[in-house]
Length: 408
Image 1 (cartoon, rainbow, N blue to C red):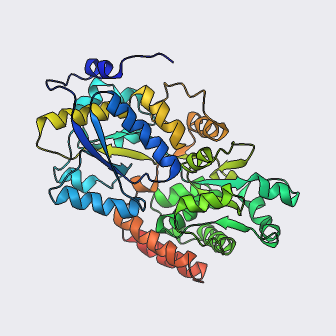
Image 2 (image 1 turned 90 degrees about the vertical axis):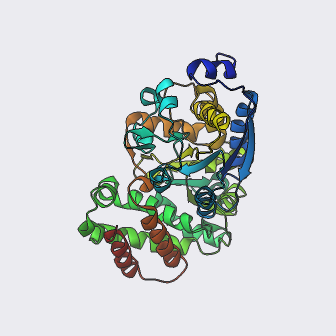
Image 3 (image 1 turned 120 degrees about the vertical axis):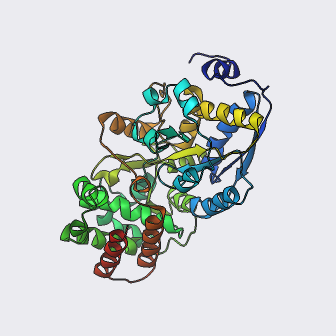
């Protein structure tokens, strides 16, 4: 790959610096697992190499824990230099309150509208025609990750679909393994349900409910089948007994569990553990039922600091995050897909290549964060926690779910 002086390139591409490089920026995020830490280290290394200084502000516990802390600091007058949010509406109120830096000049100088793919990622950063965030990756949440060794030890083929996976559960359980690893964080239950909606219900049903907001479909028999599938999956997850998502992933890595429904960020954990895609583990996008890519992911916003020198550093970091070199280095470690299609990913593993092929084919849908308000997402998460951790009847859960969506 072509080598070049990153700092010089940024000076040339963004008409910014009247100030010398060398500013410190605190960057908050919730990337704390092994694979995540390896990925965010690539960002820090590149920013430090450009002449500025990355001050890491990792917050453990995932987005559900980190976001309220980040928002409280920004609204309370103690803003960081940059902060992670997911694509969608999570930072909308902060933007509307005038608390976020306008990055439109950076985006225009670096042709973000021409290189960010799909365009919906940049649209999620845009409010009233102005751009307020730098998208850094595409994360598709709905994958099934399988331990090949569990199935090899059982002497049966590794499943290729969710249906086949469910059919092996009794054999897996009889061998002393957990069929489905699932952590206790609320978003994990919600993620599993979303994956089952497309995997079992299909793309058309998902779009009808989430894009068209058709509540008759949400209350209908096709969704009832999804809730029944979730109840079946709930039984498969008994015995996981872990909290964090990466602990659940580790159950698959150590062959204590047969599979896990989790986003493609699980690849980072397999990579850190030295596991090889296609050899040690199998990945099934769309649970092997309906292959697609959900265009969720992460973006960085830059709170206003009332400091001209730091503002220029913020803009340098924004440009850097979208640069080709960092997009390659970061996403190869993170397990996510890049937000630009003009870069070399020859080093991608088999699972990332599957995602790239689906993305290139255009079989994509927006993420739930881009379609529902944070309040609605939180309420559905709470419902799914209650459903997955109790014996709530599928029909009762469906009725409560429709009530939440109807109030959006």
